[in-house]
Length: 475
Image (cartoon, rainbow, N blue to C red; front, side, top):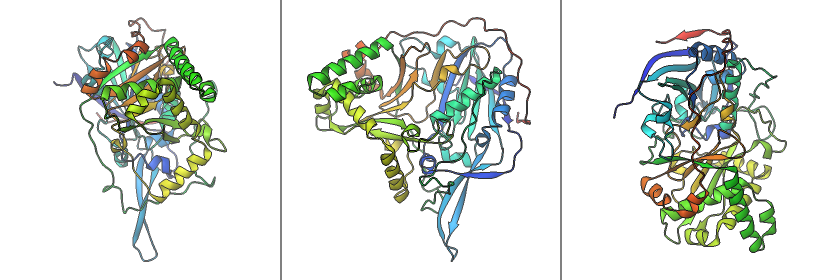
């Protein structure tokens, strides 16, 4: 089926000129070079005014502080005294090449087509809203680190972002998007500039991470996931509290008062996903399964890394692996507490030990590292996705592209209306999703869909920002 999306133009937005220099990638950054770009996008009502100039001008201003985003990666070979290659290192070459913005149109496509209620995410349609589809982070040696596709719909607009995960994690990415949106709506309440200096374990100025390869072309991999289904599931604040209360009751009955006292909504939700997906897969009783989760290192380091650190500072933690039969028998409370123990164990000492272990044996992560018997909890409901108002109202919905998807991936989003509710983007094979749809425990916790409000007139527009940098037309 042909894509309804037609690209109308391509432009390059550049930051103000500055001296060219390099920022070395850290172990956290380099480990993502074989993974996909981040692909996140926001759906909006139709703006009451032209938006391309506004977006481009605001981005040019935002790149003044976030100038590494307009760069490319560069690899340097290292040699010994005899001239033999001993390895390579990767840096951000801050040369100001720019960010690419595509303008596209999807004729005959409405907001309701993008977010159908109580149904699968329409993957072919949604995936067509993202640029640089299929790119891995190593490709940022020649592709933009950041590209944007603005797709006009019949009654709305979808802004799709493709962003190299080797440049930064989701925390820093959403800080960038929110800073851009604030500039577009001319809201500047003393915004903090990002901390661009990379972290190093010894606290000294960061040095290039030497990798034991002459170059990375033979190490990076391009992998394609199997056919997948994807659903966006809503969990209200009341539903999450009920899950948490049930887990607490089970733990108290089992005599685990400390585990009950430390329970969080995240643990309770992770337990539900882990156990119900395990049941839907009908794993052999002795098959080991684990729940993994992406976790922010910043507040756990000592000294703490500032919240505005611009780079990767994230690891995947794992609850203890357990036999599938045992996981289901032990119950909701035990699984929630197991996730909590993994979170509590992720300390400064653990982070530094993992950095040292990676340096001793570097690994580039990709889809091959997803456990087909486990689940992976990604993204975060703390990301301010719905704060990204570019001047005509907050988003109607958030969606993602095909990047970094595998069977058992659960990405957590804030709910549009806030209030402690969470939306879960759950990805499973068609067979496993069909089985999950019959799981009464799971669907008893899922709340009814809350469709986005119908498109309505937006507030009066504010003047577009005045460009502060050159823009290059690549039509």
